[in-house]
Length: 146
Image (cartoon, rainbow, N blue to C red):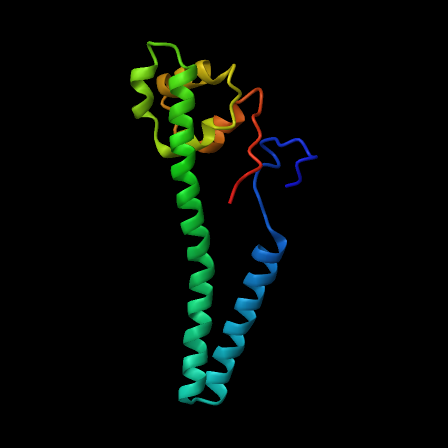
């Protein structure tokens, strides 16, 4: 998402057309073509081509999983540090009660509303990321995402 467009709940997901569309579509076409060749003209070469095509599709998904996992760890650290700074003394001991998913959703809350939102998430046991994001009133954009 371009920085010029204000980020909201409705548009905060990040899609990279060349990666999510172009690369993935190319890998799928290659897989289908390799499967067709193996069925029509079975050989060791066509079998290896199908294995490589399957490996490329698997690699596509794992690159996203690995990047997102590292990003989630960074978000967890950032949010815990932010909470140490912004939460009132009675809530600070409860920071470890937040799950990674809750922390990921809470990162979009403004500094001003974070303490009240944290209190509500813990009190109401809100675990669904979408539900947490929807109750944020002042969206804090995150443009640096994998």
